[in-house]
Length: 159
Image (cartoon, rainbow, N blue to C red):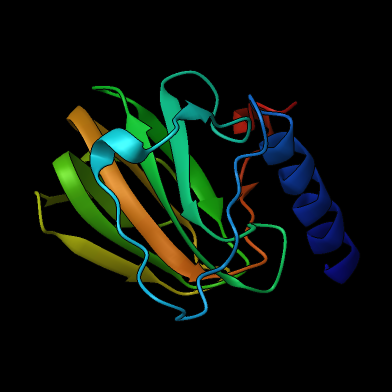
């Protein structure tokens, strides 16, 4: 499992760095302030999520053991296939509605609607899935290294 996680994290780092320019930013260490507006964000594709999802890194290097903050923009109807992460996932809905659930099998009727301001915290290794209603923007934060492993390898767009 450790070897699989290491390979997964290396692939994630490669996928992120291969996106138009390096989509990472230095971790914020409390020197002064880090201020920005949505117009300051640089969006790019998410190799680990495929078509219909974009990422904007606010801070951090997702492949390193440092704090990170990033946003995901999901098109209307985008399905987040069942997956797990190696660390806690902390999500806040900023736009649209995220329908989200715990589990290893995609079941729309099992999801909970999280409107703007809604949040979710999921434990490492716990299966989860969901879908977007309307264009949906979520913000995630935590400490890396970050990665995603799909329950069913056939759902992984990197294959």
